[in-house]
Image (cartoon, rainbow, N blue to C red):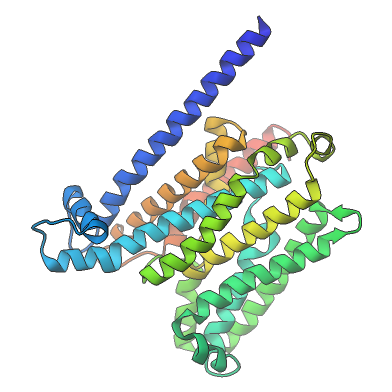
Length: 359
């Protein structure tokens, strides 16, 4: 009787997870249409989908040419970039939380975001001096390339510090990440002090995050790297489930724990570095979204990871729509929107876990 009841509960939970994932897919399709229509030149959801179909399938419609150009050149790549970045940040957060077995963990803990920020700030402040040859070589893509390499570099340093002949220590990695964050923060402070007024304005807006200025080139490059991260992390769902039992138990189940740790950390670095490179510093997506999904669907990473990807993309698209409409025609940085939502959520989460004696 107990076995039958347990199997029935499991089947109900899996069915609920599948329905939730299907619902999120439909919500993303709907919100994509709404997002494409939001702006100084509003479009209905039908007109938005007509413009999208025109972009991809040469769909014939009676929309003005300028409306099609606005959707194709500005709104559609911005919306799709929001989906990609949000999905990557959320899945990276879910993977890190599973790896640390702590829902308070975040990709920023291992220095990815701070390393990317330091490299991006350096590319802005030193563009006319030390990094001028780099700018001459890569042009407008220098900031994105530098941010990606900065995130990847700091992650490799943290992984190198935490790895010894005894394996990879998560505790050492966490401490190294904190040290890297402090060092990168100091570097950003020094570069900010050296910056002029124009540079300071650019730095300020980049650090607050934005999806504005998204292009199809940015989207294609970012999507390629982020899709590698998403697909590869999804393949580690069973290993992450085993790690929930503890490292020794996972080893008994045949999981190469050290290899899984190292690969997931590198995949998170790749994804978050690519996302930060094109969108700037957008916080709390990797913390809030996976926790909401975990509370709704449970800790099974077979459903937690894809649901986090979908909800993360949806969350960032909705936040982007708010950033465009709250003080229209001006635009709020999207990082402020996610911080306004994520800050109180994080405080409530800490208070809840403290009351339960989990901290």
